[in-house]
Every structure is written in C-alpha cells, then in structure tokens.
Length: 278
Image 1 (cartoon, rainbow, N blue to C red):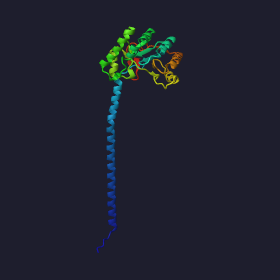
Image 2 (cartoon, rainbow, N blue to C red):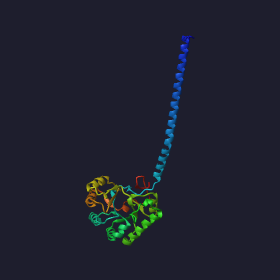
Image 3 (cartoon, rainbow, N blue to C red):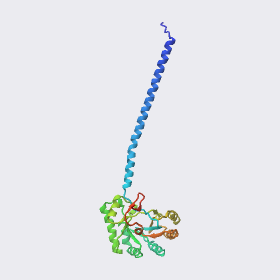
Image 4 (cartoon, rainbow, N blue to C red):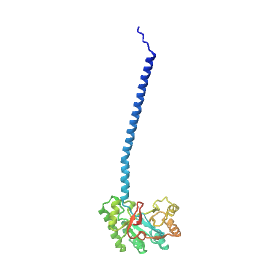
C-alpha cells in the first residue's frame, strides 16, 4: 500500500489555491450582477423613452387643441344663464315668466326639431329679448361629422330660426358637449362662436334635488361664468328662482352670452377661458 504524506507546506498551498478559487468566483458573481443591473437600468431607461415622447406629443397637441369658450375673463360681476332646449316644452312658459319677473336676459340654445315643433315659443323667446343660439338641426354627435355636414346642420337650423324670428344665430353649442378641432374651426369659419359652460346644473337627472343643484351651482359663481340649464330640467321650477335671487344678492348681473363675450382681439387659454390678447 502506498502511503501519501501531507506536509504542512502542502496544506498551506492547498488552502491558498482554494481561497483563490473562492475569490475568483466572488468576483465573477459581482461582475455578473453589475452587468445584469446595468442591462436592467438601460432597459428601464430605454422603455421609458416612448412614454416621455408620448407625453411631450400630448403636451404639444394640448397647446394646439381648438377649444370652445367655457367662461370669460371679466371682473365686472357679469354672468350668463344658458338654457338648452331639445326635447319637451312643458316648462318653457314658466322659465320665460321667471326671467321676465326678474328682468334678466338669458341665452337659449335650441335644436332645429324643437324649434320646428314649437315655433310660437321660439317667437316668444325672441320677443322677450333673449338670445337664441344654435344647438344644431338634429342634435347629432358633431365630432363624427365632416365639415360639410357640420355646415349643413348649422345652416338648416339658422334658416329655420330666421324664418321665425328674422335673425340668425351668433353662438353655437355642440350637442352632448362634444367637439373636436374640426367642429371648432368649421363653426368659427361660419362666423359663430362655440360656447360650452363652466357650471353645470345637471338638472336632467331626476334624482338631483333642487337643493343639491343649488349647493353645486351657487358656490361656483364667479365673474364671467356660464351656467348650463335645460328647459325640461326636472327641478328647474324649484331651483331657478333661488338661483337668480342668490346670484343677484351677491351682486351678479345676468347677460346674454354674446354680451358676456369680449370684443376685439381675444384668445382662449388651455382652460377654455376667453381673454383679451395682451
């Protein structure tokens, strides 16, 4: 039998070799981890670039987006009450009576089929000195129409309005509040201003009480605001007298939308506020 003798020197050399192997393994592992981390970081940065570019494009698009007038930059306590009419007519007479009693003017945005069905009320609105705006002929989704179709909708309505009142409209409100750049530009080219609202009563919802509507509207009153109501609003008979009285008590004056809009060179900021060009 062969006998192997392990000397102290051999043990030391072996220990050094093992230590070297372990150290090399550790270095390789750390290097691999760093490389993996670098790849992960680079991948993360690279993957974020498309989202950054997309954000920048959205910001640029937002700056160029065509907007209607939501409110007007004023400091003279003037506000506008607007009333959309497209369906029923059972409350129109009451609304006109309430406006006359309080000696205030409003802007009615009427649909063509409503005006055609209730020409006497259209004439009464005009005779009382209220402004009548264009709410389209058939209440379509305007952002789905071509420029030619938009023109047809507005002209058909204005032809009817002119046959009843002798006047054509100056302001337009898109059905459903829907619009895009093409709608705004086409309407502007036709000589009308597209108008939205800054305060919505949401009075078309039957579950909203008169008090809920007032609690929503009154705290938001401000110079140049535009209030949206509907002639068939479920609680309009209950909330309208208080809305008018409270607004007047706060010093506000009701005017038509055309009277609220600014004259001269104007611009509309990113919030839809019409301002004088400085």
